[in-house]
Figure: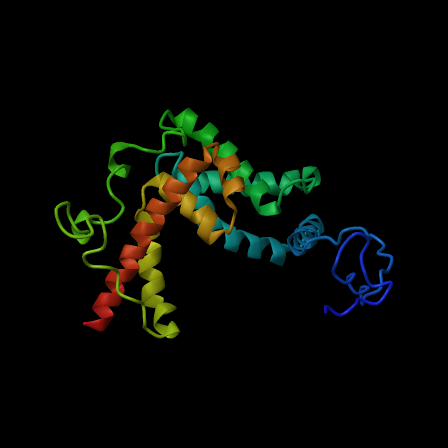
Length: 247
C-alpha cells in the first residue's frame, strides 16, 4: 500500500509533496545611479587636462592617434603631404573646439569625425576625393585567399582546405618582435585605402563596428567585407613570416 503523505504537505489537488520553502531571504535592493564607465571617465580626465593646457597630455594624444589619422586621411586626399596637412588642421580644430565637446561620443570618435569632415572637404577641393561608399573597385573584388589552397570541384570535399594554414607555434617574443611589427606596419600601409582605413579604426584604434560605420557613412555589410579583406592580407603576411622562420 502506498505510504500516506502527511497532511499539510500535499499541494491542493495534486498527489506530490509541495515544494520546500525557499532557503534564501528576499532583501530590498536600492537602485543607485549607474557608475561612469572607465572609458568615459578617462575621456573626462583627458578633456579636462587639455582644457587646462596640459601639453604633455596633448602630446601623448597626438602620438597615439596620428598614425591612424594619417591613414584615414590618405583615403580622401592625394598624397601624404596633403594628409599631413589635414591631420594638423584636425588637431588645431580639436584644441579650439574643446569647449564644444559634450561627451555624447568618445573623445577618439569626436577627433576622427573632425578629421573626416576636413579630409572630405580638402579632397573635394583637390577634385580627387573618392567617396568611401565606393568601397569595391575592381582591384578589391578578388578572392581574399589564394584559390589554389582549396580543393577543386570534382575532388572529395570541394571548397575545403587543400593546404590549411599552419599553426603559429612560435614563442610570443617572436610574434612581438620588431621585425614582425615592421612587416605588419608595411603591409597595413600597403592595403587599399578603404581597407586600410577600416582596419586602422577597428584594430589599431579599437573602435567598434557601429562607430566605424557612422564615421565612414558605410553599411555594416561593407564594413565587414573591408575588414575581412584587410585582415586576410595581414594574416597572409604573418603566415609567410612564420613559414620563413621555420625554414
